[in-house]
Length: 251
Image (cartoon, rainbow, N blue to C red; front, side):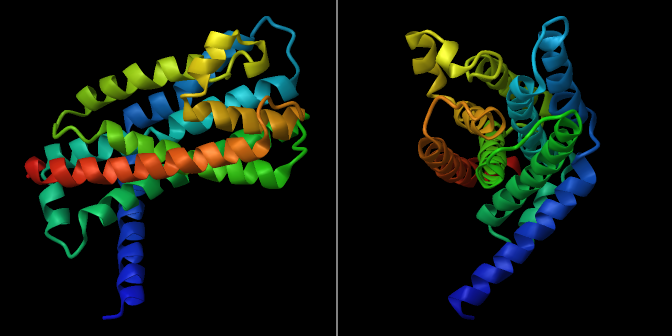
């Protein structure tokens, strides 16, 4: 079989894995709570009682929504399937570990983009304006994929306990939100705060959202996009390498 046909076949199988993940896991309690409810209520706690414009609020809200939703499914799929003993059946099929990982990432990616689009439509209905729609669309797609790959890194530990993985991901995700310019724009952070923020991939999507909705981002658009691409590649490669080492230990 030609290399192109093999690649196409594996992509189809990855899409089948993604469809299975979405059907089974998108309505799970931890996904709904940590992926949708938590970022919304956290943001409401920040904005209620403050005289903020919708254009100022939307970039931070979108940053949290895409970050939490895109990392909601991917961390828990592997431990849940290990616990349910369905991972053995999946690995016995003619799919590679990389294909399984890509399918899990695509499921989280689709979930993150869908919920983010709902948030965008709500913001537009309240008067927000997207000044650079192509930049915004590219940033949203890259960020959803990047954060989905990050979620797979959290689930690399060969455990069958979803609670363990959720605790690990929470220890990383919550501090990241507060250092990524979500609540305070990068231009208002002190120098040491900006130095920490630049380590977070969420920083670059939030800055892109401010470019698109406020026309006042801190970094050039090209740097934001390049950083998201670099983080996406890094997280994807790292997730695949880690799971190739640990997934056989789950069965």
